[in-house]
Image (cartoon, rainbow, N blue to C red):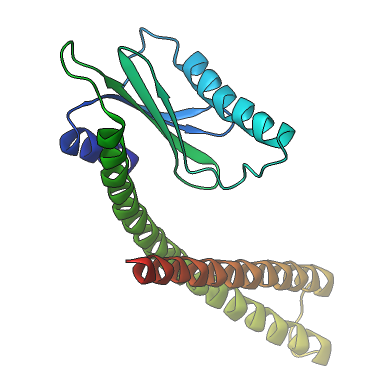
Length: 212
């Protein structure tokens, strides 16, 4: 999905020479730069730009938490850094042609288009996450049902042992029942967590539709 995002940006904006997607800690998770440059160092320096900008805001008693974009412009290159998610960012490198300057108005137009592309892929990613979570919930429910069934059978077996109807190791059966009960409780917690995550993802999609 991330690579699809980069391809969309490159197709929609031929002026973009390179794209870098990175986390706040400087880890690059997708880029069009090749390995001949120092990729880890690139991510480290991009993260430092954000860090220094935050420090500048802090010193000036301004809030940097909701940063949206940073634009760096020189004679031959423009770099736009945009916030993607809570911990992720995207940097776009525009190389200016010899007789054609990249005007600020053009940059703003590019930013609007890029944000549209990012929003589009973000919704698709959220939907994909929901489908994965729903499949995970289905598997968890099947596993829980299977373990509950085994647990009930063992409890019936233990009751029959206590009545003297059958012989067996009561301590071993009791231990297995306790272990299954513990596993079932963990599965229920996992199910509840996954259901809450799906609810949160669906609310996120609803909010994005309301903005349109």
